[in-house]
Length: 302
Image (cartoon, rainbow, N blue to C red; front, side, top):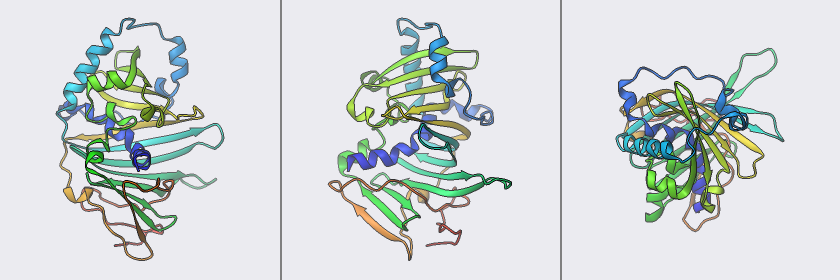
C-alpha cells in the first residue's frame, strides 16, 4: 500500500513546492508561466557551465533554514500548474492543472491533458484527479469508471505527504532534508537560485533520481521544478503560476465523493496491492466550491 500511495501522491509534488513561500501574500502576482525551456529545463547544461558558487555548502545551509522557517507559516494554497513529460521512448506530453492544499495533510489535484490536432486549436482533455482527505486518498479514473480509495493507517496519515520528493516541497524541514538529500546551490542570478537535489534513501530513490528546483530569491518560491525519473529515461518539467498562498479553501473540496453509475468504487486497505496506473479523471469548473464531478464526455455525475 505504501508504494501505491506514494506514487499517487507524487503526482502532486510540484504543487506542494509553494508551501515554502508564505511571504507571497504581500507580493505581486507571480510572473506568467513560461515554457519549460529556461535554465531549469536544461539542468545538465547548467551543471556543466556553472562555476562552484558555494563550495563549502554554507550558503545552502542558510537558505535551507530560511526556507524551512517560512514554510511553517503557510496554512493553505491554490495554484495553477503547467507540466511537460519528456521521454526517450514517447512523444512529449503536456498538461495543465490546478491544485489546492490545506495544512496539515489535505490536497486536491487535477490535471487536463493538452491535445493538439493539425489545423485545430488545442483541446484540454480530463486526465487525473486526486483528493487527499487526511485519512484517505481518492483516485479517480475515467477510462475504467473506477474510483480507488486508498485508506491510510494511523502512521500513514502522518507520512502520506512526507514520502518521496514531498518532504522538501511541503512542510519543509531543514534537518530532515539534510538527512535525506544532498542539496547543492548550483547557480544563481539576480532573481533566482537553482538547487540541485540527489535523494539518499531507497524510499526517495524509488520516486526520482535527481531534481532541480528554481527558487525565486524575493519570495523563496519554486517557480520551476525538474524531476528525473528513477531509470533516468525521462523527466517531468513543472511551471507554477496563479499562486494564492493562505487563500480561503473550502473544507468540502477535500472530501472524497462517491459517483453514480457507471462508476464503481474500489477500496484498497493498507495491505492491498498497488493501485493501477493513473489515467483519465473527471474535471470540475470552479473548484473553490464543492467540486461537481463531470464524466468523460462532460455530463454531470453525482
